[in-house]
Image 1 (cartoon, one colour):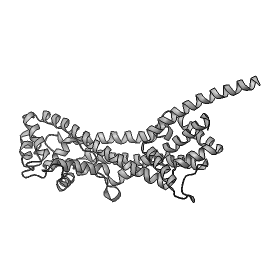
Image 2 (cartoon, helix red, strand yellow; image 1 turned 60 degrees about the vertical axis):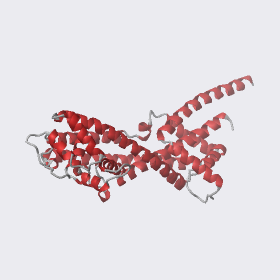
Image 3 (cartoon, one colour; image 1 turned 90 degrees about the vertical axis):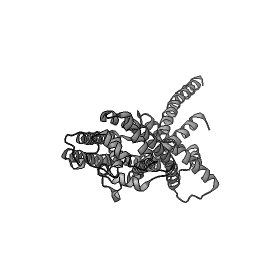
Image 4 (tube, helix red, strand yellow; image 1 turned 135 degrees about the vertical axis):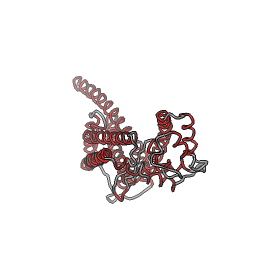
Length: 361
C-alpha cells in the first residue's frame, strides 16, 4: 500500500469516526435532557450536604429542598415532568435548605442572625450546617458580605459537582459508543480492508473527508450557527430570570413568595420559550448528523449488518471503533484537518515526481 492510499484510508477512517462521535454526543445530550441527568447529580450533591454520615446521601432531605417554593419553580414541565432544576444559585439553595427547619419564617433571610438561628436547627453533623454557621460567624451582621462568602463557597461546590457529572458522562459515552458502533456495525478492520482494496469507495469517502477538513471548525461543519444563537438566547433568558429572582429577594418590603411575582413569571416564561427554540434548533443539527452518516453509506462504505457473520476478527474491529469513537468529535476533527493537510502536500510532491519522470521519458 503506497503512502497516498494509506493517507486516504486514514482520512476515510477519520471522517467515519468523526460522524459517529457526533452521533454519540447528540444521543448523550438527548438522553441527559430526557432523564434530567444534571438534575439528578444536583440532587445527589444536595443530599451529600444534608447527610450526617460521610459517603452517604440524604435523598429525602434533598427532595424537600428541591420541592421548596424557593427552588421548585426553576424546573420546567417536560416528558414525564422530568425537566427538573439542573442548576441553582447559592442563595435559593440556602433558602430551600432552611425553609424546612423548625422556626422558619418567610422573612428569615433579611438578617444574618436569623439565618444563623435557622442553620442551628439543621442536622448536627451535616456539612451544610457547619458551612452556614461558619460563614455567619465570619460575616458578622453584614448580609452583603455573607452573600459574597456564600457565593464563593458555592462556586467550589458547583465545580466539584460538575467534575462528578463529567466523570459519569465519560462512562456513559463509552457505553453509547458501544451501542452506536454495534448497531451500525462500524468495524474498523473491515473498513480498512474495504478502503484499501476498493478505489472507488476510497476516493468517494476521502473526498468527503477533505471537504469536511476545509471547514473552519466543528460548528461550521455541522452548521450550528442557528443552534448556537438559540443557546445564547436561552442563556440570556436564564440570566434575566436570575436577575428577576435577585430583584425580588432584595425588594423592600420583602415579598413572601418570589415565584408569584409578575416580573419573575414573565422571565420564567421567556426562558421556557427560549428553551423550546433551542430544542428545535438542536433537532435540525441532529438531522445534519444523520445526513452525514447516510452520505457515507451512499458512497459505498459497508455500514450496518447485512448478512455479516460475527467472528473474533469482527469483535476486534468493533472494539477498536468503540475506543476511537469515544475519543470524541473534537479529537477526530483535528486529526482530519492534519491528515488532509499532509495528503495535500503529499499529492503535490508525487504529482511533480510523476511529471518529471514523464518529461525524462
